[in-house]
Image (cartoon, rainbow, N blue to C red):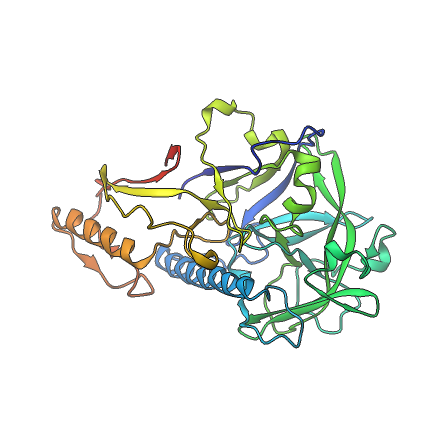
Length: 383
């Protein structure tokens, strides 16, 4: 495992407004600090688990592409659209205060989703979560969003003056409720909290057999309803960063906003590559131009990672994906390079312990450390 600091500068022309600097505690879903901690697992069990999460996550991202093209990413109950795969397989969670009493809740951090929602009282049907379910009656700052707030209500639908949503996912899980506004609390390095009013989904009705232990999802993509879309430009100059730490440690990290995003380091120390705009989707797209294996360029066709018609294709950086996934033609090229490299050491591919035949595994002898390098060549940055 390794530490990765991602800094997102979402707009070249940064806002001149005052930038607030604050952070959210972030933990891996398998960390001992997590409410989803699975206990002590073997290395093979962890790999199988992460492969499964990555495959499910890829299905989720692909399905949101399809549903976004069909304009049904958040659906009216009568809409005939393909359900999404549940983004429970997001890898990281944050701890955030919500409401006048500043009670803290675990939410999945999801840079692939733009809709923030939590379970709310009174529950008609709710799944079990670690923290008490949010009660709107306990907070004077809570406000239901009306239908005449058209920017917020679209693409949801109106019922009895309220903006209503229902999200259905593969696997039978669904959650539904209404759009509301509430104070979300963030902390600073000196523990002084900031709060910002944010619109979100309040869900009194969710599949009760769903095992999540979290209160909901914090949507962090580029859509207007995401945290970035609502607060980014006005409050933290469209800047945030997060550090991904080893899930096997008790160490947590932070999701940082504003100037805190640089983690106290000079801007010049960071490599930079711009985000690409996809008119059909609100994810974070990068301009990946080629890949090198052990110092040798693959010289992939220039359009390999190009964003295509209706928003398909491209390269996404996503907080919820444990392992990098590549299109099949690129995977085959790299598979050949890996097999040829290890064959020089008399090491053959292993088909056991990976959890899937699609995974490329090798049974390495004790003490082996001659690992090959891989470099992703982004526009302006080699990583």
